[in-house]
Image (cartoon, rainbow, N blue to C red; front, top):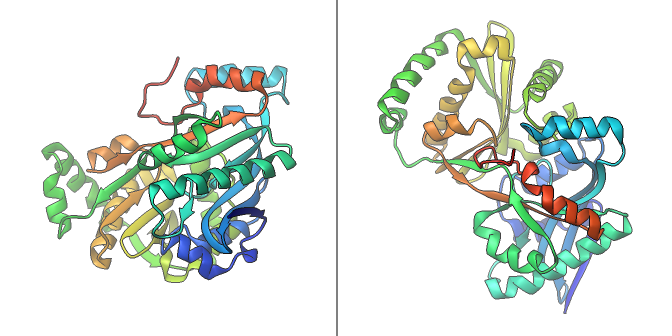
Length: 370
Protein backbone atom coordinates (compact mmCIF):
# COMPACT_ATOMS: atom_id res chain seq x y z
CA UNK A 1 0.00 0.00 0.00
CA UNK A 2 1.33 3.44 -0.93
CA UNK A 3 1.81 5.82 1.97
CA UNK A 4 2.99 9.43 1.69
CA UNK A 5 4.26 12.15 4.00
CA UNK A 6 5.70 15.64 3.78
CA UNK A 7 8.66 16.56 5.99
CA UNK A 8 10.30 19.94 6.59
CA UNK A 9 14.00 19.04 6.54
CA UNK A 10 16.31 16.65 4.74
CA UNK A 11 17.72 15.72 8.14
CA UNK A 12 14.51 13.67 8.65
CA UNK A 13 15.30 11.56 5.58
CA UNK A 14 17.87 8.79 5.52
CA UNK A 15 20.70 9.82 3.21
CA UNK A 16 21.06 6.35 1.72
CA UNK A 17 17.33 6.22 0.88
CA UNK A 18 17.45 9.60 -0.89
CA UNK A 19 20.58 8.65 -2.84
CA UNK A 20 19.00 5.34 -3.87
CA UNK A 21 16.21 7.35 -5.50
CA UNK A 22 18.24 10.15 -7.08
CA UNK A 23 21.62 8.53 -7.66
CA UNK A 24 24.72 10.67 -8.13
CA UNK A 25 23.09 13.72 -9.71
CA UNK A 26 24.75 17.07 -8.89
CA UNK A 27 21.66 18.70 -7.36
CA UNK A 28 21.25 15.89 -4.87
CA UNK A 29 21.19 15.48 -1.10
CA UNK A 30 24.29 17.57 -0.36
CA UNK A 31 23.29 20.38 -2.68
CA UNK A 32 19.75 20.54 -1.29
CA UNK A 33 21.15 20.54 2.25
CA UNK A 34 23.26 23.58 1.32
CA UNK A 35 20.17 25.30 -0.08
CA UNK A 36 18.13 24.47 3.02
CA UNK A 37 20.80 25.90 5.31
CA UNK A 38 21.55 29.00 3.21
CA UNK A 39 18.95 31.22 4.88
CA UNK A 40 17.26 32.22 1.60
CA UNK A 41 14.60 34.67 2.70
CA UNK A 42 10.94 34.06 1.90
CA UNK A 43 11.12 30.29 1.28
CA UNK A 44 10.10 27.33 3.42
CA UNK A 45 11.40 23.97 2.28
CA UNK A 46 9.44 20.73 2.12
CA UNK A 47 10.16 17.17 0.92
CA UNK A 48 7.42 14.84 -0.33
CA UNK A 49 7.98 11.11 0.20
CA UNK A 50 6.06 8.05 -1.00
CA UNK A 51 6.66 4.61 0.49
CA UNK A 52 5.47 1.16 -0.48
CA UNK A 53 5.67 -1.34 2.35
CA UNK A 54 8.09 0.97 4.16
CA UNK A 55 10.48 1.29 1.21
CA UNK A 56 10.95 4.73 -0.35
CA UNK A 57 9.71 4.59 -3.95
CA UNK A 58 9.48 8.31 -4.83
CA UNK A 59 10.59 11.66 -3.44
CA UNK A 60 10.62 15.32 -4.43
CA UNK A 61 11.77 18.61 -2.94
CA UNK A 62 9.14 21.33 -2.67
CA UNK A 63 8.81 24.84 -1.30
CA UNK A 64 6.30 27.40 -0.04
CA UNK A 65 6.53 31.13 -0.71
CA UNK A 66 4.60 34.30 -1.48
CA UNK A 67 4.71 34.58 -5.26
CA UNK A 68 4.45 37.94 -7.10
CA UNK A 69 2.63 37.15 -10.34
CA UNK A 70 4.87 39.38 -12.45
CA UNK A 71 8.00 37.33 -11.57
CA UNK A 72 8.28 35.73 -15.02
CA UNK A 73 6.85 38.65 -16.98
CA UNK A 74 8.99 40.40 -19.57
CA UNK A 75 8.05 42.62 -22.47
CA UNK A 76 4.71 44.45 -22.75
CA UNK A 77 2.97 42.53 -19.96
CA UNK A 78 5.34 43.67 -17.23
CA UNK A 79 4.41 47.42 -17.17
CA UNK A 80 0.71 46.43 -17.07
CA UNK A 81 1.13 44.29 -13.97
CA UNK A 82 3.49 46.78 -12.34
CA UNK A 83 0.78 49.40 -12.76
CA UNK A 84 -1.84 47.08 -11.29
CA UNK A 85 0.43 46.37 -8.33
CA UNK A 86 0.55 50.08 -7.51
CA UNK A 87 -3.26 50.15 -7.45
CA UNK A 88 -3.89 46.85 -5.65
CA UNK A 89 -0.52 45.89 -4.10
CA UNK A 90 -1.69 42.76 -2.30
CA UNK A 91 -3.85 41.24 -5.01
CA UNK A 92 -1.00 40.18 -7.30
CA UNK A 93 0.93 38.13 -4.75
CA UNK A 94 -0.31 34.59 -4.13
CA UNK A 95 0.63 31.95 -1.59
CA UNK A 96 2.45 29.35 -3.66
CA UNK A 97 3.26 25.69 -3.01
CA UNK A 98 5.55 24.23 -5.66
CA UNK A 99 7.20 20.89 -6.35
CA UNK A 100 10.83 21.51 -7.25
CA UNK A 101 13.17 24.19 -5.95
CA UNK A 102 14.06 27.72 -7.03
CA UNK A 103 17.69 26.56 -6.86
CA UNK A 104 17.52 23.40 -8.99
CA UNK A 105 17.09 23.02 -12.72
CA UNK A 106 14.17 20.59 -13.03
CA UNK A 107 11.17 19.38 -11.03
CA UNK A 108 13.45 17.04 -9.11
CA UNK A 109 11.11 14.05 -8.67
CA UNK A 110 12.93 10.76 -8.26
CA UNK A 111 11.63 7.20 -8.45
CA UNK A 112 13.01 3.92 -7.18
CA UNK A 113 15.10 2.15 -9.83
CA UNK A 114 13.22 -0.42 -11.84
CA UNK A 115 9.77 1.17 -11.66
CA UNK A 116 8.08 1.01 -15.06
CA UNK A 117 6.16 3.93 -16.54
CA UNK A 118 2.89 2.23 -15.60
CA UNK A 119 4.11 1.67 -12.02
CA UNK A 120 5.23 5.29 -11.68
CA UNK A 121 1.79 6.73 -12.46
CA UNK A 122 -0.01 5.72 -9.23
CA UNK A 123 3.11 6.62 -7.24
CA UNK A 124 3.21 10.11 -8.76
CA UNK A 125 -0.53 10.50 -8.18
CA UNK A 126 -0.05 9.65 -4.49
CA UNK A 127 2.87 12.09 -4.27
CA UNK A 128 0.71 14.86 -5.76
CA UNK A 129 -2.12 14.10 -3.32
CA UNK A 130 0.23 14.42 -0.35
CA UNK A 131 1.71 17.62 -1.75
CA UNK A 132 -1.74 19.16 -2.28
CA UNK A 133 -2.91 18.17 1.21
CA UNK A 134 0.16 19.83 2.74
CA UNK A 135 -0.37 22.93 0.57
CA UNK A 136 -3.98 23.16 1.71
CA UNK A 137 -2.90 22.95 5.36
CA UNK A 138 -0.54 25.88 4.68
CA UNK A 139 -3.37 27.84 2.98
CA UNK A 140 -1.57 27.98 -0.35
CA UNK A 141 -3.99 28.73 -3.19
CA UNK A 142 -1.57 28.50 -6.11
CA UNK A 143 -0.07 25.05 -6.81
CA UNK A 144 2.75 24.45 -9.27
CA UNK A 145 5.24 21.93 -10.60
CA UNK A 146 8.46 23.65 -11.62
CA UNK A 147 10.41 22.84 -14.80
CA UNK A 148 9.20 19.46 -16.00
CA UNK A 149 11.40 18.32 -18.90
CA UNK A 150 9.86 17.42 -22.23
CA UNK A 151 10.82 13.76 -21.80
CA UNK A 152 8.81 13.64 -18.55
CA UNK A 153 5.76 15.44 -19.96
CA UNK A 154 3.69 12.30 -20.73
CA UNK A 155 3.97 11.09 -17.12
CA UNK A 156 3.10 14.51 -15.68
CA UNK A 157 0.29 15.08 -18.19
CA UNK A 158 -1.32 11.87 -17.03
CA UNK A 159 -0.93 12.59 -13.30
CA UNK A 160 -1.36 16.37 -13.15
CA UNK A 161 -3.58 16.99 -16.17
CA UNK A 162 -6.53 15.16 -14.69
CA UNK A 163 -6.16 17.31 -11.55
CA UNK A 164 -6.60 20.50 -13.55
CA UNK A 165 -2.97 21.61 -13.87
CA UNK A 166 -2.09 23.50 -17.04
CA UNK A 167 1.42 23.43 -18.54
CA UNK A 168 3.15 26.53 -19.91
CA UNK A 169 6.66 26.98 -21.30
CA UNK A 170 9.44 27.55 -18.79
CA UNK A 171 13.16 28.22 -19.27
CA UNK A 172 14.87 25.63 -21.51
CA UNK A 173 18.00 23.80 -20.41
CA UNK A 174 21.00 24.23 -22.71
CA UNK A 175 23.31 21.22 -23.13
CA UNK A 176 26.46 20.81 -25.16
CA UNK A 177 27.50 17.23 -25.94
CA UNK A 178 31.24 16.78 -25.38
CA UNK A 179 31.70 14.34 -28.26
CA UNK A 180 34.97 15.86 -29.49
CA UNK A 181 38.54 15.27 -28.34
CA UNK A 182 39.93 18.81 -28.19
CA UNK A 183 39.02 22.48 -28.19
CA UNK A 184 40.40 22.75 -31.71
CA UNK A 185 38.04 20.02 -32.89
CA UNK A 186 35.17 21.79 -31.11
CA UNK A 187 36.03 25.10 -32.76
CA UNK A 188 36.17 23.34 -36.09
CA UNK A 189 32.51 22.34 -35.73
CA UNK A 190 31.31 25.93 -35.35
CA UNK A 191 30.35 28.04 -38.33
CA UNK A 192 33.21 29.92 -39.97
CA UNK A 193 31.95 33.26 -38.64
CA UNK A 194 31.51 31.91 -35.10
CA UNK A 195 34.93 30.26 -35.18
CA UNK A 196 36.62 33.48 -36.29
CA UNK A 197 34.72 35.50 -33.67
CA UNK A 198 35.62 33.10 -30.86
CA UNK A 199 39.32 33.04 -31.75
CA UNK A 200 39.32 36.84 -31.63
CA UNK A 201 37.44 36.95 -28.32
CA UNK A 202 39.72 34.39 -26.69
CA UNK A 203 42.77 36.59 -27.18
CA UNK A 204 41.67 38.30 -23.96
CA UNK A 205 42.97 35.25 -22.03
CA UNK A 206 46.41 36.87 -21.86
CA UNK A 207 44.96 39.69 -19.72
CA UNK A 208 43.07 37.43 -17.29
CA UNK A 209 44.19 35.14 -14.48
CA UNK A 210 41.99 32.07 -14.01
CA UNK A 211 41.78 30.13 -10.75
CA UNK A 212 39.85 26.94 -9.96
CA UNK A 213 38.99 26.62 -6.27
CA UNK A 214 36.47 25.25 -3.79
CA UNK A 215 36.93 28.17 -1.37
CA UNK A 216 35.84 31.80 -1.55
CA UNK A 217 37.52 32.73 1.76
CA UNK A 218 38.28 36.44 1.72
CA UNK A 219 36.24 36.93 -1.47
CA UNK A 220 32.67 36.57 -0.22
CA UNK A 221 31.92 40.31 -0.14
CA UNK A 222 33.21 40.83 -3.67
CA UNK A 223 31.36 37.76 -4.91
CA UNK A 224 28.09 39.05 -3.41
CA UNK A 225 28.67 42.40 -5.12
CA UNK A 226 29.07 40.54 -8.43
CA UNK A 227 25.89 38.59 -7.68
CA UNK A 228 23.97 41.80 -6.97
CA UNK A 229 25.10 43.28 -10.31
CA UNK A 230 24.20 40.09 -12.18
CA UNK A 231 20.78 39.85 -10.53
CA UNK A 232 20.06 43.50 -11.33
CA UNK A 233 20.70 42.82 -15.04
CA UNK A 234 18.44 39.77 -15.19
CA UNK A 235 15.10 39.99 -17.01
CA UNK A 236 13.51 38.01 -14.21
CA UNK A 237 14.54 36.82 -10.76
CA UNK A 238 12.87 34.76 -8.08
CA UNK A 239 15.09 33.72 -5.20
CA UNK A 240 17.65 36.07 -3.62
CA UNK A 241 20.73 33.99 -2.83
CA UNK A 242 22.94 34.55 0.20
CA UNK A 243 26.64 34.40 1.00
CA UNK A 244 25.87 31.22 2.98
CA UNK A 245 24.59 29.66 -0.24
CA UNK A 246 27.76 30.48 -2.17
CA UNK A 247 29.98 29.30 0.70
CA UNK A 248 27.83 26.32 1.62
CA UNK A 249 27.49 24.57 -1.73
CA UNK A 250 31.19 23.58 -2.05
CA UNK A 251 31.43 23.00 1.71
CA UNK A 252 28.66 20.38 1.54
CA UNK A 253 29.53 18.94 -1.87
CA UNK A 254 33.32 18.82 -1.66
CA UNK A 255 35.06 18.34 -5.01
CA UNK A 256 31.71 18.00 -6.80
CA UNK A 257 31.23 21.80 -6.53
CA UNK A 258 33.83 24.43 -7.27
CA UNK A 259 34.42 27.94 -8.59
CA UNK A 260 36.30 29.22 -11.57
CA UNK A 261 37.44 32.74 -10.70
CA UNK A 262 38.53 35.38 -13.22
CA UNK A 263 40.96 38.07 -12.07
CA UNK A 264 42.57 41.07 -13.67
CA UNK A 265 45.59 41.66 -11.46
CA UNK A 266 44.20 41.10 -7.96
CA UNK A 267 40.69 42.26 -8.86
CA UNK A 268 37.99 39.59 -9.06
CA UNK A 269 35.89 40.36 -12.15
CA UNK A 270 33.83 37.17 -12.43
CA UNK A 271 33.02 33.98 -10.54
CA UNK A 272 31.45 30.83 -11.96
CA UNK A 273 29.86 28.26 -9.63
CA UNK A 274 29.97 24.78 -11.19
CA UNK A 275 28.68 21.36 -10.12
CA UNK A 276 29.60 17.98 -11.59
CA UNK A 277 28.80 14.31 -11.44
CA UNK A 278 30.38 11.43 -13.35
CA UNK A 279 29.16 12.65 -16.74
CA UNK A 280 28.01 16.28 -16.59
CA UNK A 281 29.35 19.71 -15.70
CA UNK A 282 26.53 22.01 -14.55
CA UNK A 283 27.00 25.77 -14.79
CA UNK A 284 24.91 27.11 -11.88
CA UNK A 285 25.77 30.81 -11.71
CA UNK A 286 28.08 33.07 -13.67
CA UNK A 287 28.56 36.34 -11.77
CA UNK A 288 30.33 39.20 -13.51
CA UNK A 289 31.25 42.85 -13.26
CA UNK A 290 29.78 43.69 -16.67
CA UNK A 291 31.51 47.04 -17.11
CA UNK A 292 34.96 45.51 -16.74
CA UNK A 293 34.23 41.92 -17.76
CA UNK A 294 32.55 42.42 -21.11
CA UNK A 295 35.55 44.14 -22.76
CA UNK A 296 37.56 41.06 -21.74
CA UNK A 297 34.92 38.71 -23.22
CA UNK A 298 34.69 36.89 -19.89
CA UNK A 299 31.42 35.16 -20.76
CA UNK A 300 33.00 33.48 -23.78
CA UNK A 301 36.26 32.86 -21.96
CA UNK A 302 34.30 31.09 -19.21
CA UNK A 303 32.48 28.99 -21.81
CA UNK A 304 35.69 27.67 -23.34
CA UNK A 305 37.25 27.23 -19.90
CA UNK A 306 34.31 25.04 -18.89
CA UNK A 307 34.40 23.03 -22.11
CA UNK A 308 38.12 22.50 -21.44
CA UNK A 309 37.32 21.28 -17.91
CA UNK A 310 34.86 18.77 -19.38
CA UNK A 311 37.61 17.44 -21.65
CA UNK A 312 40.15 17.27 -18.81
CA UNK A 313 37.73 15.45 -16.50
CA UNK A 314 36.33 13.04 -19.06
CA UNK A 315 32.79 14.44 -18.90
CA UNK A 316 30.33 13.97 -21.75
CA UNK A 317 27.98 16.93 -21.26
CA UNK A 318 28.21 20.62 -20.40
CA UNK A 319 24.91 22.01 -19.06
CA UNK A 320 24.94 25.80 -19.04
CA UNK A 321 22.66 28.29 -17.29
CA UNK A 322 19.13 29.18 -18.32
CA UNK A 323 19.87 32.43 -20.18
CA UNK A 324 21.70 33.82 -23.26
CA UNK A 325 20.22 31.15 -25.51
CA UNK A 326 21.25 32.81 -28.76
CA UNK A 327 24.93 32.54 -27.80
CA UNK A 328 24.51 28.96 -26.59
CA UNK A 329 22.86 27.81 -29.79
CA UNK A 330 25.59 29.54 -31.79
CA UNK A 331 28.16 27.62 -29.73
CA UNK A 332 26.57 24.26 -30.51
CA UNK A 333 24.21 23.64 -27.59
CA UNK A 334 20.85 21.94 -27.90
CA UNK A 335 17.82 23.03 -25.91
CA UNK A 336 15.76 20.76 -23.66
CA UNK A 337 12.31 22.29 -23.27
CA UNK A 338 10.72 22.50 -19.84
CA UNK A 339 7.23 23.35 -18.59
CA UNK A 340 5.67 24.74 -15.44
CA UNK A 341 2.34 23.17 -14.47
CA UNK A 342 -0.03 25.26 -12.37
CA UNK A 343 -3.55 25.55 -11.04
CA UNK A 344 -5.32 27.65 -8.41
CA UNK A 345 -7.76 26.24 -5.88
CA UNK A 346 -10.20 29.09 -6.48
CA UNK A 347 -12.09 28.40 -9.71
CA UNK A 348 -12.46 32.09 -10.62
CA UNK A 349 -8.79 32.87 -10.03
CA UNK A 350 -7.81 29.70 -11.85
CA UNK A 351 -9.92 30.67 -14.85
CA UNK A 352 -8.33 34.12 -15.01
CA UNK A 353 -4.84 32.63 -14.75
CA UNK A 354 -5.58 30.19 -17.57
CA UNK A 355 -6.60 33.12 -19.80
CA UNK A 356 -3.51 35.19 -19.00
CA UNK A 357 -1.07 32.24 -18.89
CA UNK A 358 0.65 33.09 -22.22
CA UNK A 359 1.87 36.36 -20.70
CA UNK A 360 3.75 34.44 -18.01
CA UNK A 361 5.52 31.88 -20.19
CA UNK A 362 9.19 32.16 -19.22
CA UNK A 363 10.76 30.64 -22.35
CA UNK A 364 12.29 33.57 -24.32
CA UNK A 365 12.76 31.33 -27.37
CA UNK A 366 8.98 30.85 -27.71
CA UNK A 367 6.84 33.60 -29.20
CA UNK A 368 4.99 35.34 -26.39
CA UNK A 369 1.62 37.03 -26.30
CA UNK A 370 1.70 40.79 -26.78
